[in-house]
Length: 456
Image (tube, rainbow, N blue to C red; front, top):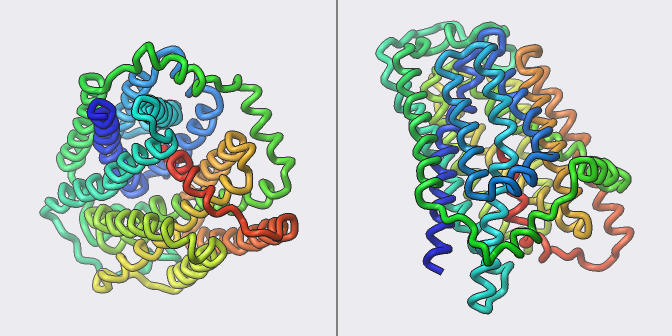
């Protein structure tokens, strides 16, 4: 038990160090590299590469290298992205974004496989239920991992807060929904961070990634030979073409087609907050050093509400929670359309990400749970569709980020939200019609840990 728990903690803190760097860096891309939309273009390319790599690369790498070295190697892809930011250009950021996207899928799959094997191994020796131990291991992992959103953003705000030059502005007409689509970094409430501060931040992030790799290489145990049978069973994954075909054959299920708008919306709304809200509202009116603090607010509320709604959903049911998320997001979108951001309204800048975090927690937990319940017999194909359509939402959100004004993006978000709720209502109607009994809500807990592995 002690050895297995040690390995779980090593993986957890390795991911904490790695995503402390990547999470903070992702939230800064639209503000830090706003020239010609380089920052958001790199994120769009990153998620497109993730879609492709998730279809065939994880099982190949895990079989060839094993879980430990797949995790270590994939982490190096994240370090490459940090290094690409030192001299940000189309020739450095785009290739390193592709590298990160390629490494993202194997990283999460290898982590998932390792924890599953470790949980089953201990359960077999201790005579306990494998699913219970696996859920405990994933619980420990996400408890530690989720705090990365706080530390990465806190570091960026503290570093950029050292800037001595402050610029007072009287005209914030270019901030908010009717942004002027200009380089906001130079028209903001604070001067552009100096190169020295940017290099300090990137140095901290790169060092954090290197420490993550060293932690895995030095302290994570390789899977033992007596676990080969378990490993073989878990890694018996279909070929690329069979996975590819199964993913799209699953679209024959009417319910899956109806859930596509909801899944795409999940990517769109997350992309809007990290790519557009941070740039057009926070950086524009307050300065880039506030981006981290604002995203800490989102991460903290999101983590708390994920835990809260995961517990109370058995009492409220998913329909009420989906309705709460839709109403909250609709209110935020309308308010963002009307609001004229100004530095004196500091609290308002934090209220929006807090409410966004509340609704996002529902989209993540309940949509994942819904997929697990509706498609229990075809979970692999179902969650492949989930990753595909959510990643497509990210690609679209970051892809059109520099082409459209904020108010147009908000109208797109609102239209997609209305469409996805209508489609979701149709799914609930079909379910009620086909199975008048009580839906098996208890199944949701089973898919929780694996379903959350939709991060980059």
